[in-house]
Amino acid sequence: MNILTTPLAGVIIIEPKIFGDARGFFVETWQAERYAEAGLPAFVQDNLSRSSQGVLRGLHYQEPDAQGKLVQVLEGEVFDVAVDIRVGSDTFGTWHGVTLSSENKRQFYVPAGFAHGFVVTSESALFAYKCTELYRPEHDHSLRWDDPDIGIDWPVDAPSLSTKDADAPRLAAIARDELPTVDAYADPKPR
Image (cartoon, rainbow, N blue to C red; front, side, top):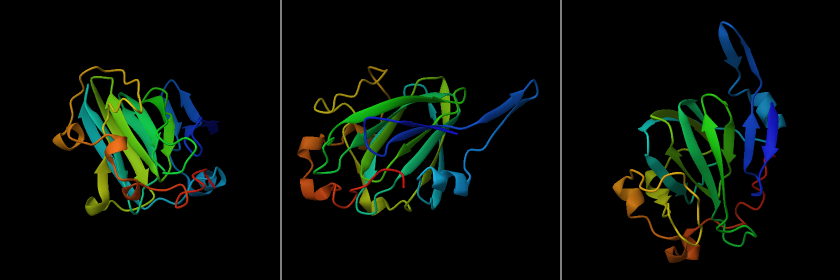
């Protein structure tokens, strides 16, 4: 597999090896030893969602018990985004995005302490992700998808949003003691 770094420490793109011929293809989407060698942590929960074109999910984060996420698209295509929301980080409020699709088979690792979101750019998308912590609804939070202080360049103008995401606050409106800190997640780099 090939590991691509991004401007955000710990946020990486993984290009797995694909073995294909006229019959189809084979790809390992997770292998504990190989991914541990690449520095990824252990995962405790897998999730799957299907969304229609224009659906935007995010920006989500969990605090406390922040989740690192390894995400991929099984069918379709999405534009996927990570935002550093660790108070005290040199890249606080900075985002990085990548196109994930069933065609390119890329994976995107979003470390604990980062907000995460995606928008579906194909007719529909089947989205899978592994999490480093269990989902805890009492610690689940959203950040405004179109926060002008973050300035994400989404490839849609009027996405379909849940009420929770439509009503999410801007980063500047969230009390700093309610956000993850760089001290708590000082080394988001894959280990």
